[in-house]
Length: 211
Ligand code: CO
Image 1 (cartoon, rainbow, N blue to C red):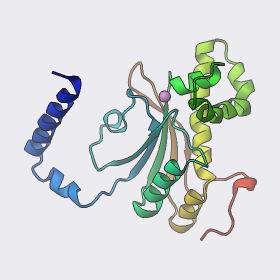
Image 2 (cartoon, rainbow, N blue to C red; image 1 turned 180 degrees about the vertical axis):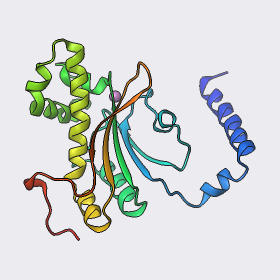
Image 3 (cartoon, rainbow, N blue to C red; image 1 turned 90 degrees about the vertical axis):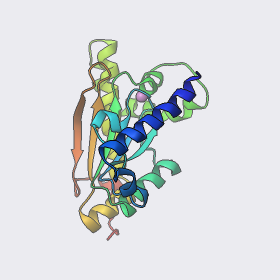
Image 4 (cartoon, helix red, strand yellow; image 1 turned 60 degrees about the horizontal axis):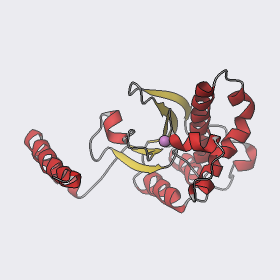
């Protein structure tokens, strides 16, 4: 059997299993979603938002791209962010990176890969900001890990620089921003940084007319 056919068989089995355990599950989710969380994660197949957090459909609104980036010109990410924050009114926005991220690794290298070069430029910009701290690490593996961590922290900062987040902070005192990193080797998430509503934002990025 082709592998894609197996996916459809798995789906039938999963839906039957969920319904057996909770007969109203799909009925409850049919007309409304009220997730508390927006997850901005890497596209990497090994870091699925629901599985690693033990959550089920309906609990996490998800945006994934290569290397979990918050790029201020990315209309896709901004649309997801605005909808999650303004309409769904999520309480938490989580940027979750992961050690061993191929996107970060490629950005630290010198090979042109194609159109993705332009995307990876955003990660090279993170390196430029934290070059000294990254290079202070003893070995390549540790430098790579540090870059993954700095990248997550910069993307959280990028969230706070958007008018979408600053307006929500002014209007409803949320959402709470989080930067996490996932370890492929043991499945554990390490929290790196938190920015509660009202956190200090660099003066140049602060909007004073959002109420
Ligand atoms: Co990745």
